[in-house]
Length: 242
Ligand code: F6R
Image (cartoon, rainbow, N blue to C red; front, side):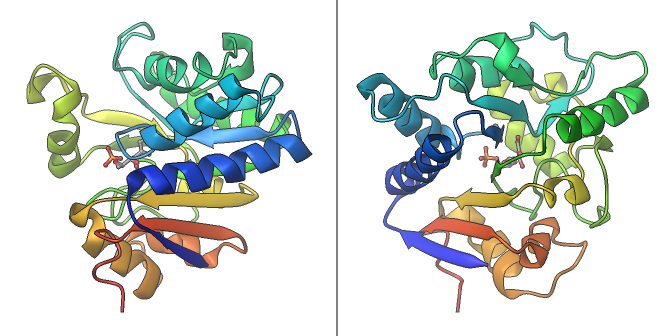
């Protein structure tokens, strides 16, 4: 695992956007796995700026979601489908046909999960998967004690994660209790994993993930098992690394 310490979130976003641009120049139809939440926004802004300036042509790139709330209608502004369309797909000038994600509104959620794993495989696999990290060490929404071999499935959000995500909704009561998330085993199949963590609130989770034992209690520690994982942290999030 490679750990890169950058001064701040903007520098982290720029570094990772350049890595994505390099990938897309080499492989124009690369499949890029995207995370939601606040952390990756500087990456998406920096990448969109590169597209606008002509520094990279991302018109053939493909985008796939890491996770999705269960029970929110697809058009809900906080469904991850809506968020990824708004923050990634549209700013990159791509259309909905370049984009795939799990169906959080499906009647048969289990079938939707299996269909998504299958779709990822049939698309040739994820070339670069962006990840954030939860304060409890989750990746995607694989909360502590998730199997390190897990596949895409439905998970129950912890109270902590629902509270962390309540800022995107009008009230805590509106935050869904369930999500579909790529499993840790699914995530580990991506060719390159890139995790960005910023801010002092992530310092404990980063230290456990990077320097602690590989354990289901810290899902992000599974990155230690991957042959090509890059962890980009700002100085605040790196504060508890030895
Ligand atoms: C969401 C996801 C989550 C977030 C994590 C951190 O798609 O994958 O694992 O990355 O909850 O969220 P932020 O970045 O908002 O602190």
